[in-house]
Image 1: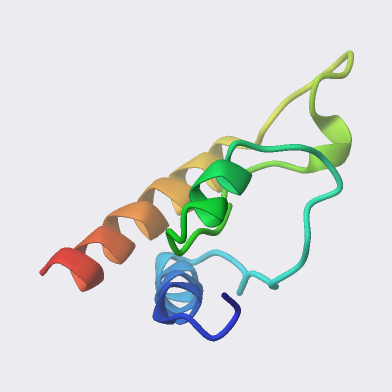
Image 2: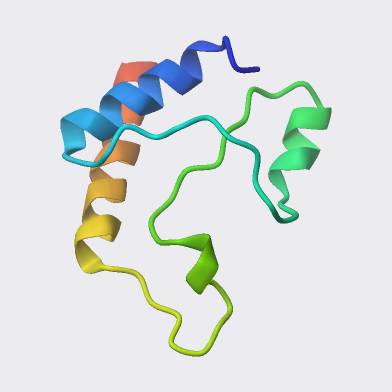
Length: 82
């Protein structure tokens, strides 16, 4: 749900990690997160790269984006799990 704390926690963690503040939008592709959401598990999808480059010739992700994302995951876990 858009009003769940997970969205705010990930958003703040991303900014602290040096990444841009993520926007809450729908994804233009299928994903397994739908299974968790259908089961009532608060869910969001966050990761590095541009979906326009996914599964294409020359697919790539900038190392800085991977590092920002890893820091975001770590900060999110620390905030939610203590």
